[in-house]
Picture 1: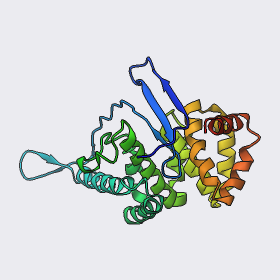
Picture 2: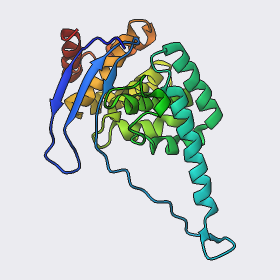
Picture 3: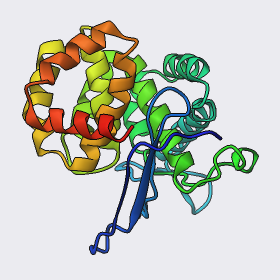
Picture 4: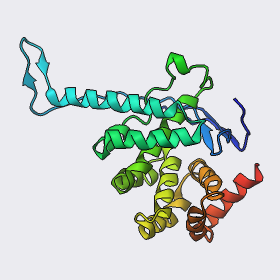
Length: 246
């Protein structure tokens, strides 16, 4: 798989909740990918205030059962989209189709799957051999679906983009900028990014701006939107870093 290295950063966190991570920018499909390895504790449980009693002693919760089916359907669609990440046109088309089929009511379920399934299915192991490649592809797939959900995805995108530090901050900011370029809540999104971007960690800034610069080369509307960030020192520094590493 051909790759063009852009920027590489390696660091180790001393906190038990984080671990050493290695990230590499590449642009083998016309947009930036960040291959990252994260050790995450993704334990969770399903709860219901009104569980129904199934025949026999085992409690059966229809709400939880529905949630499991919902998560399974979402996970299948994520895999279906993510496996085509190196084929931009197919990837975008599948993300649009998946969003149409799942509907905006699955946005929260999709967001809960950001950090699940670190390893690819066996049939895709050769296509995603590196550490972190599959989970990065899955995250791009989820956020591309969010883009096609449009305005309905704004609350979760803002929560991720401007919340606690995570690799997915960059994805969320990218999609917010693309939606703003499309005219969706444009002024509010630009104001949010101008306010929050300087506060983001350096890695999140790189991860957000990298794909945007590539897309702006073929998307004049997005390029015009990004011009409204050019007076921000943090944004200019990020652009300079990315272009200097090419």
